[in-house]
Length: 226
Image 1 (cartoon, rainbow, N blue to C red):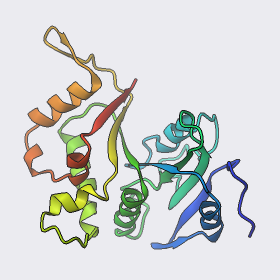
Image 2 (spheres, rainbow, N blue to C red; image 1 turned 90 degrees about the vertical axis):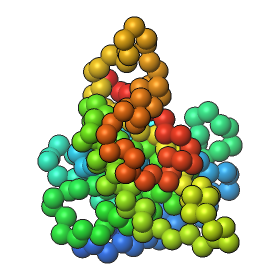
Image 3 (tube, rainbow, N blue to C red; image 1 turned 135 degrees about the vertical axis):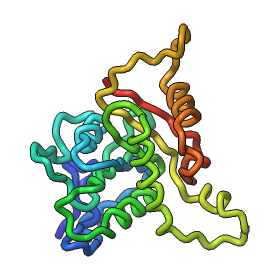
C-alpha cells in the first residue's frame, strides 16, 4: 500500500486494536519514515465520548478529519495519526494522535486501555488529558486511574531515582476541561486557568495518593473550554 503524501489529507490509523490485539499499520509507518523535518507530537487521551476527536480537529484547524461519533460508545479505535505542517513553527511537522477512549464498557479486553495510553505517553511531546465539567474529586479519581496505567512503563537507567527516570520520557501534560461554566475566582481574586488547577490540586482531599510522574516533569497546564 502506498503511503499518503505529506502533508496528509486525512488521518490514518497508526495502531489498530482488533480484539485486544494492537498492531502497527505499515502505511502509517511509511508516512513517518518519509518525514524529514523535526516532529512535534501531540496526543489526546481521556474517557470515551468526551469529544477528544473534535478537539483534535480544532488543533488541526480543520472542520473534519478525525471521525466524530454520535452514539454512546467510543468512535475511535486504536490510535489515529495526522501529520500536518506546524501552524506556528515553519519547517516543523505537527503529528496529532487521537487515541481510543478509555473506559468504554463495550470493550471485551481490559488491558487495551493500558497499552494504548502507555503508547500515547511514550510517543508524545505533549499529552492532552480531556475531561468534561469541573475538576472535582471524581475527575481527580479518573485521572488517578489513568496515571496508574503508567505502571506498565519500565525505565532502564543507571540513576536509582525513579522520578528522574520518568523525567526523560514523559511528555508535557495539558488538562483540557470541556463545558466549563464556573467563574475562575477565589473570593475577590480572579484566577488564571493554571492558578485554578493549582488550587484544586492543593485542596482536593486524597490528592497526595495520586502518583503522576508526568506532572512532576512539566507542571500540568489547564485549558478551560466553555
